[in-house]
Image (cartoon, rainbow, N blue to C red; front, top):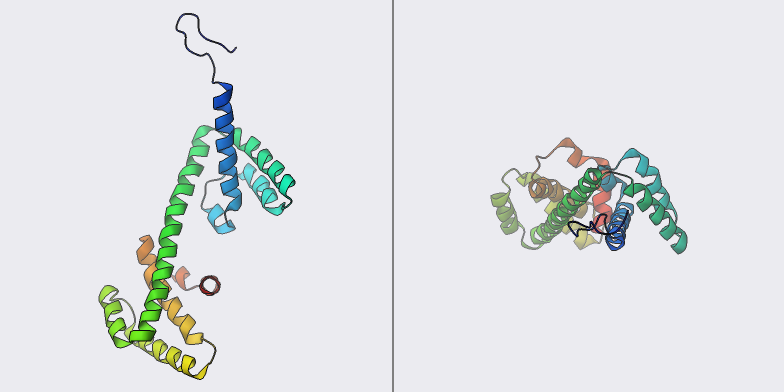
Length: 197
């Protein structure tokens, strides 16, 4: 029942153009979901029935088939109520803000590491003034070992350990979290090593 109300002159239904804009918006939202890593996707309140479609869209790499799968995912997403889609959008916005803060903290950890290796005790004093909970002795030993590794062309074991210590120090503060045991997991260490390379 399209058209206008004879008495008020208002449209009786949403226009086709608006329907198309809404559909394209949901398609873009689906593309964002497909581009997320599994860890990021776990933080988004995606309904269980959409997860297999997202996984399938990630699996398919052929261009046209991927576009077709994204359209299929968007079709299923349009069946969800507006509150669910809004919750997904809000979580993605929060994730992007968190990701930006996390990346900034990791860059700061790299900067502090370079300062510690270059300036030694001066940089360490500045770091401790900003982060008094840092372990002075551990950092001093790691800096000394990293400098010796560089001088002898050895593998950068202590260099990486400095990064891990700084990462575990700076990241919780940047995200507004308290340091937890999960920050020192071996899995996290492997992730940060690959991120710094």
